[in-house]
Image 1 (cartoon, rainbow, N blue to C red):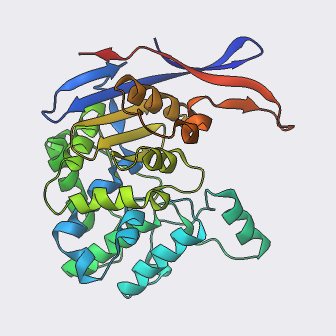
Image 2 (image 1 turned 180 degrees about the horizontal axis):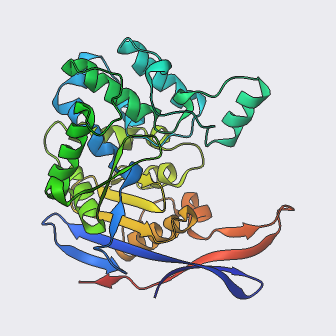
Length: 326
């Protein structure tokens, strides 16, 4: 079986098929679910690798970017005040403004942040976009290298050319073997085998050079990488620095060991995000990686309930898949 099941009234109402790749530091597949070679778009799970040029080209230090701000550059943040403040701080440090962001606006993911904006009649701008930190980082790279900032999201722009090179490097794929698309925020996104995404997270976790700063920032500031009530934040907080994690749109989620021992990549076939926490938690349980953690903090994700508008429990979501160890 390869499924996450949603039950209501004693019957299976919905089914979410999942695919998983788990690789070790040698790049070997050690466990799988479904098709680990399925071609998927990394979507926002690519963000840690899109931050690599900022480290290797000394952009972070050139502009005095903090660890917390580096974390938001790797984030799909919730648009909470702390996230917006961090992005605005980056923009101020590089001498630009939110008008220079080309990601477009959307309401904050975090409900209270969105309600506050609406209640105060404030305009929702590009800085509230969950990808605004990444875009601020791309602008910083462009400025540092003397490239034009306008059109930095276009495939032919030097910024995006560099991003494609980084994905090629970390996945060990030739550029010609990477499928290209346009992400929700307008930049280039990357289609590749799920196993290669797992490999990339394993390699980054084991990086012994300056790129370890990316992992360290994501571990030190998990609230900046996702946000209040988000699974990615709760997971990293619960595991106490043993892993870093990044969500992607359409049911993508990736985890790397901070010692470079393994990488995990997940794709929910129908793109449903609600299935990913159960998959991640079951895999970590299988490898005994949740031992000694505060499992209570993950209970809302490991055993999610379906509630109606009255708050009554009317169903549940459970896993029904077999992790094949190789």
